[in-house]
Image 1 (cartoon, one colour):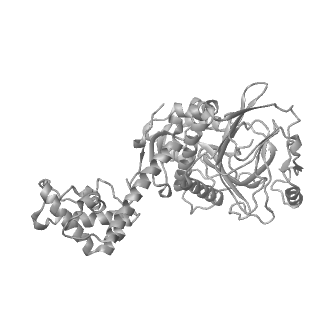
Image 2 (cartoon, helix red, strand yellow):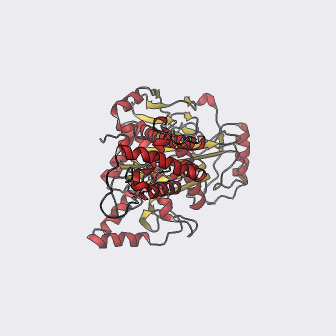
Image 3 (cartoon, rainbow, N blue to C red):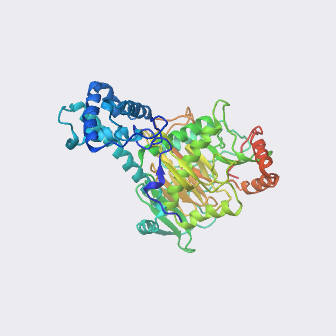
Length: 521
C-alpha cells in the first residue's frame, strides 16, 4: 500500500497561479553571469521598484493576473530588465526566480528601498498574488486529504469506527417491498402524474407489458435512512454486508461542479441504453458490444460525429478515477476487493483513455483547470465499465453482473421541487433518502429501485437540465458478458509488438452496432 504526502499532487503545467514553469529560462546561452553580491542586490531593490512604478498599472495587472499567460508576461518583463544589467550589475537571481524575488521586496517592509516610496497599489497587488499562492497550496493539501484518505490505514480505521452498523432482516422471496415489477411513487401527487403518463406513453418496446405504479406505505418499510446519515447495513441472519453509504463524499465544490458538467455532457451526447425507463442512462468506458456483434472496446455510442470521443473518454476517465479513489477510502474492504478481484482475475482493463497502448492498473489522474489542474501520479485507475445517469428511475428489478457489488455517486440533486429519486433496497424493505454528493454501494442481484421524482415527464427532455428537479450521478456497473467478450478479444490479439496494437486499433475502428451492450440483462 502506497504512502502519500503533499508531493504526490503536482500541477502538470502551472506550478502556482500566475507563475510559469520554473524550467522556463530567459537567460541566453553561454557561461552563467557572475554572482550578485549583497551590496549589488541592495542596488537592485531600488532599481526594480522604480522600474515597476514607472509602469505601475501594467505591473499591477500582471501581478494580480490569475492566468498562466499573465504570469509568463510578468516573468519576461522582469527577467529582461534584470538581464539588461543597468550600471553593469549582474542579475540578482536566476531568470526563473525573477518574479518571486521582485515581489518579496514589495511584500517585506524591511526590504523596501530608502530612496523611493512604494505606492499602495503595488503593495496590494503583491498581497493578492501571495494569497493566490497560499490558496492554491491549501487547496492542494485539502484535496489530497479528502481524496487520498484510503492511503492512511490509521485514519481509515478511525473513520469506520464512526459509522453506524444497522442490522436488518431479509424479506422472504416474493415478499419484497416495494414489490418487484412496480414503479415506486412516494406521494399521491407523484402517483397520479406518473400513472397517467405510463398509461398514455408510447412504449419503446410494445412487447413489454406496462408496469404498475405502487404508492409506498411507509409503515411497511423496515428502515428509512435519513438524508444526513452515513451507515453500513448487515443481514441479521447471515451477518453479510448488504448496503453501505457515505454522505459528503467529496468536500471540494469545484470537483462537484465539474462532475455535474461531465454527466450533463454524457447524457447530451450519447445514446440512452434504457429507453423504457425514465430519465437517461448512458454507458461510458468499456463495452462488450451488442449481442448481435460482440466486440470489446470503448463504447461507441456518440450521437454525433462532431463530438470528440477521445476528449470525452479522458474527462470521464478522470472523473470516475477520482470517484474510485474516494470510494476506496470509505467503503468496506470487501466491497472494494470485489471489484479488484473481478478485474484482476480476468485481466480486464481499467479505465485508461490510452488503452490499448497502455493497459496498466496504475496511472495518472489529471484534474481539469477548474479544479486547479492538480495531477496525482501512480494511483489506481477506476474499474473500466460505468454509467452516467440523469433523472433516472426504474421499476423494482434486479440484474446479474460480473461482480457482486455496484457503486453509485449522486453528484447533483437540486431544483425547485426536490422529491423522489430515493434509493430502495427492496429485499430488505429499506429506503435511503437521497442527497447531493452521496455515494452508496449495493448488490444488484437483490431487488432494488429508484423512486419516481416530482416532475411532470410529459414534455421532459431527459438530456437537458430541469429547473424543477434534477439528479445526476455515476455508477460502476458491469455487464455479465464483458468477461467472455474480453477473453475472446484478448485471444485474437495474442500477437507480438506492433501487430497486437494494430489489431486492437482495427477493432476500435469497427462501426457501432445499432444497439449497445445492455448492462441490465
